[in-house]
Image 1 (cartoon, one colour):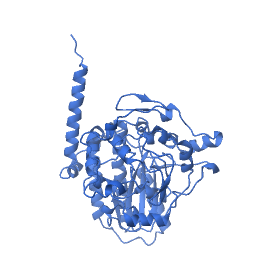
Image 2 (cartoon, helix red, strand yellow):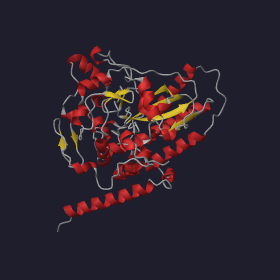
Image 3 (cartoon, rainbow, N blue to C red):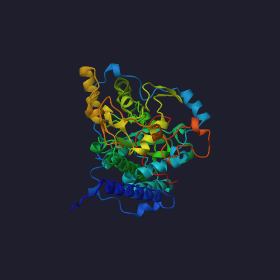
Image 4 (tube, helix red, strand yellow):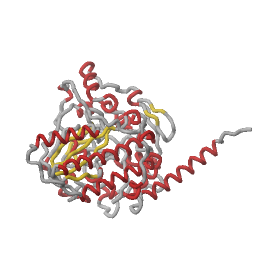
Length: 447
């Protein structure tokens, strides 16, 4: 007597589970429901161990950067062109303008979203509380800006953040829908490493689950840093990732450089980290952009360009809104992200993400080659839609209808002028102004 499930029965169960998961995710995303999830218990720590951040501050000892890799500190900019672009069209919040597409995506990612929904709701509630909080004392006049900045860094390290950086507030990089939410003239960017092994399985539900988890955690930690500054008598607020172009601030704070894939590439983990943000009037010492040789590595490597399953990443940079960058084709990128558990292939195949900047620099100095270049260890990936493994030189073949799946409405809301001119969220995390969601867009839109 046969007791195993037939192929038809397995497929039926999978379709049923997917349908129920999408329905439940859609229910939880409702603005009247989502905030209340904060009262539910989060996933137990032992259940999160295969997706949780290592919670460890970075200790960087970089070798000398080869002259052939040096370009410019941070990003090459044309300040006057940046201002002109801002005056023509301020940056918009992708989560609000493309709300329908984001909701569709989150429903598709139900298997990774649902376990972290209570924690994401707690992060959202913590940010809202932070925006209403007031300083708890008069500023400590005995602490110099340098001492206050060091105390904040020490506290961030004790919380397990990888690194923090301080940049000057710039209204050009706050999304129009969130103007006036910041306090003071300082932005603190927080970096939290994403689970290493989970990321190497990109694209997968586990990888996307790790992204959702780290997104919630770094937001909560940013609020804790804001609380710390308020105990010293300063105004400070935590912010959600979709309120501002955090990659721009990360680059200005010397935390990394803009990669060809549109993401912030940090020396320790590449883009295998999530970003949190707070604003404050505390007189923190500003950090400065740094040339880590990362743009030079990108030019020599171009693994993300070759391996992008849909060819959404151009090989060369050009000036866009006053910034020199590779402008991602979001009409190809975002539908892919939405249907493949966040995709993230461009993050997975980055040698800095896999090996760290120090190892990449050492190999380049020794051989003139990029570590892992065109090896299956670095550039191979399993494609979730057909279950195949694609080695270097191979990519999935996708039909035209893949980019317009049933029910997926990738059209801006309200204003049709945005169809061709809108610039959108850069967190997905991106330092680009065209907002590629190359990393999974973690979190719903409870406005």
